[in-house]
Image 1 (spheres, rainbow, N blue to C red):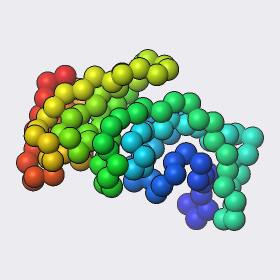
Image 2: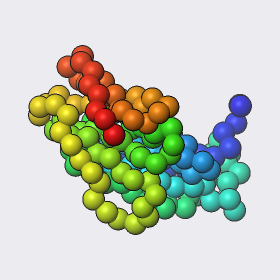
Image 3: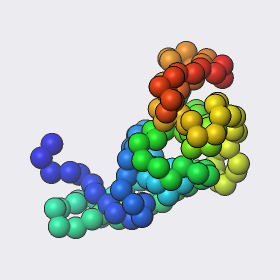
Length: 142
């Protein structure tokens, strides 16, 4: 692809460092302590190099103390759960079948100052593996 189908600068206030598709929807994360769920506005989706297309914002998944770069979120292979870590060593888990604002499930994976920055979820979805900032890996049963 030489020309993007869609660009936008309204989903986050800072650079985006992680994007995943959820069907036709888009999940994106920046350093603004949330993951945004949105879809391109079909009426204005023909993007050119000089203009940004509009989006339809659907939901924010808010978390605390995740204002650092390169923390990746993950979606399990069944598209049921969304995972993201923060700098306090907590891992946030959102059930994607819930619509609206609600508190995610959280658990502490490691001590403060060591954070999980990437997640791997095997096809069985029975465990979640995380890579940590102290060069270790961890796993947790779902």
